[in-house]
Image 1 (cartoon, rainbow, N blue to C red):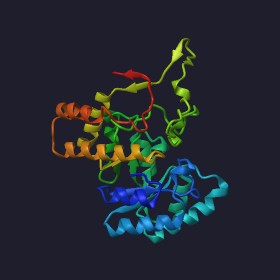
Image 2 (tube, one colour):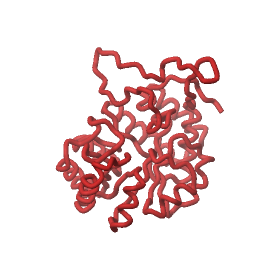
Image 3 (cartoon, helix red, strand yellow):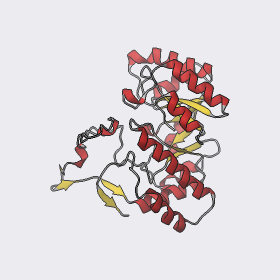
Image 4 (spheres, rainbow, N blue to C red):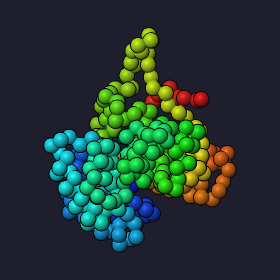
Length: 290
């Protein structure tokens, strides 16, 4: 679970989450200020709680480090690792190389924001210390098969696709998206740029395709049965949505653990998510039915 505070970490760690990941503004990460902890003391407190419960706390550093932030960011990351953080989620290759050259040993997870889409690319990162990969949401189980063959040397983490799926590569998309805003009761959110009818370079209007729920449920089912090690829920500024995502993900995962058929999983999964707030999936696009 991605968390923004010790209070959130305590909530999820005491309700079944095996790990939490957290960030601070001083370490570049793919999140708005509201998605970060207040400071390092709160991170220390979260690390202590995770260790007490026999669980894990990771630090998120999943952005490209500007030159001015590199040395202070590295210093703070080392401090968290030495204190007892289980690992670091990264994107920046320069950060990976620094860790390897300076003998900083910790569990390194490659962020989905690294846009690693094939086994050759992940082998490149594994040679530099990566031991876990957060699979891009946009990969199908068939496309991911060569990556799964790298287990057990590589751990694989996935999103709960039926509830959390983004149609755009969010680290590459420059269109306005209000996902990072708090929902203010009684005030309409600013419209997504993507909700506008955009002119296509080929003529006509363009809307991004969206897989339907059946496809997303089947993909989640397949990834579980292929041997995915972790399921991830991202941080978000609207805690009600994140809590709903967590509990529905737990429910879907328990269904998978029971060994039910794909057909039954899809039926029950559709029922479970039909009233979902669709956290991270507030896009209304053309359905992709292939």
